Image (cartoon, rainbow, N blue to C red; front, side, top):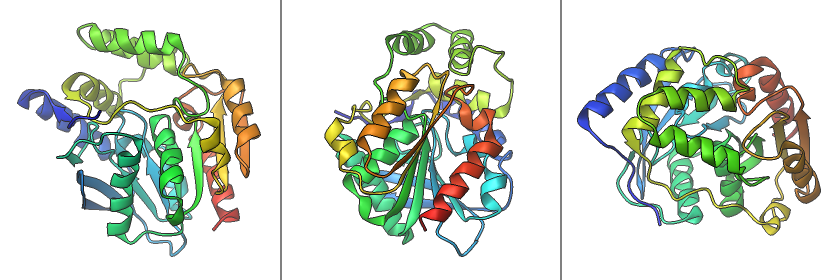
Amino acid sequence: MGRIGHFTTVEGRARYFAAYEEAMRECPGERVELDVPSRYGTVRVYRYGDSGRPPIVLLHGSHASSAMWAPNLPGLLAERTVYTVDTLGEPGASLQTVPMRDAAERARALEDVFEELGLAGFHLAGLSAGGWQVLNQARYFPGRLASIALFDPANTLGKLTKRFFAGAMAATLLPGDAAMKRFLSWTAGGGPWPDVPLTRVLLAGMSEYQSGPPFLSYPGDDVLRAVELPVLVLIGGRSVVHDPEAAAERARTLFPRAEVELWPEATHALLGEQPERAVARLLEFVAEHD
């Protein structure tokens, strides 16, 4: 069962939005802020550009908000209109008012948004938990989509590892930001985690917000086999969220129309590590499936 996502204190909300607004200033180009109604709450969407071509809609990773797309937007905006969505029930500028009880209702919330915006024939892409949402949308409401792209999706092609669960639990339960920084660093290969605005968004979101949506349910083989859309899958070979090789093989075996790549040197943070390469690959893919 889901619950309503919320900030736990007034002070925590203020801390979060100070970081959020700073991080959003890192996103290039002019944007339009849209607060879109759904049956589960109001969803913040940002629209960038006006290319006249089928747009790309981006769904962020857990706690990351639309601010995470700053490194990827310049390349994408050279060719496409881009929409970024703050996930309902997670820290960000969306405001949840009704619980989402299961995966179908999470997809229904996004379908409400896309219907309100009049979007159809677009490309949907997401990282980590956002990748899970992308597949979930293709499962329940494929009719609006031209293609989907999954960037190291969490609990989607491979189950979350025990060590990832343990690390996430420790980061959540231990006081202060130090444990969270260690966890974030570990997911990105173990190097020093940069002190940048997005880091402050992640830390504030993890400590100041109680998320609402139910946990990411693992999709069975039948779900993947039923996806008739073109699918792009990029897996980080050093990802710690799942077994990368097994996840890539499952995608190759089960998706009817998939292009699957395992990037050996990449981690779960592949979009931030190699933004130009990832953007180029996505643009190449969507151009083939407009």
